[in-house]
Image (cartoon, rainbow, N blue to C red; front, side):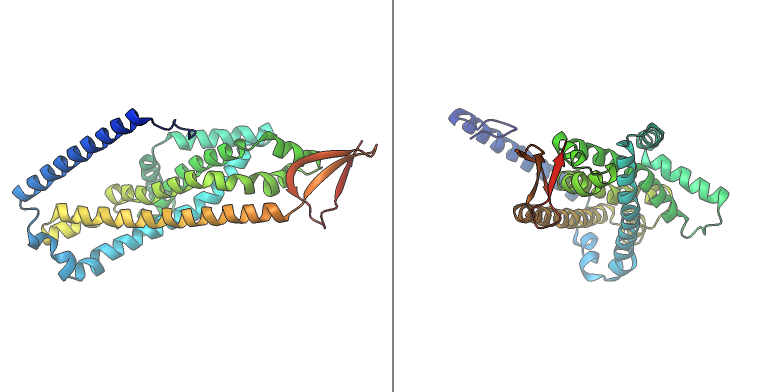
Length: 310
């Protein structure tokens, strides 16, 4: 059986793939052994450097958990703002009106081209010069500002690509039924595109969580990675601290992707169940001949809705 990406390997290809896998695992094991040997030579595997994460609860309550909470707070605020803003920008880029489409496209391309770190730095400078935001929360404001401006622009492109990936017949059928552009977008295109866009959206949400570390490194935000400096200063265990922080990032992002996978599965199930229960609208000519169903657009009544055409 062949797939979209590759043909099913034959007997020789299977043997070759098995050899490649064994060689890769051997090289990976050697690399891991070398890393552990170097860490042992530098006394980084000593128990006193790792034991504080198990025996000393203050390292969690004072540093790691507050830093994790700050990371989640900054990431969630940025997500809540960037997702609807990106959706609006993406829809704006699809507008039939040039006075909407062109400025929105310029905004998206501008902020998408600027590194998020520069946006954070500029945001911090603007808050210093033109607002009276307290210095205690200014790093959070600047972090969220940079994340929103950059990621909303990227999400706009994801939304635009997701809608463009749908068959043209969907929009044309809805237009033939007399639906306005807003109705076509809200009731036909976007609900179908959400499932296709979800993997890319989740990847961008993971990027938002990870990019909060930039604000900790440059703006002094007390997020998770920035706690490495304080923990290392108190316990002299830089490498173990970075390993633990890296594992926390893995767990956090894995939880986010796991939730997104569950949500995508639910949406697909609802789409299948809804598609079988809802009748399709048919188009009938005035001469009496039945036309074919133009799209999988459910009728709002009892299934007998008929649209006539001249």
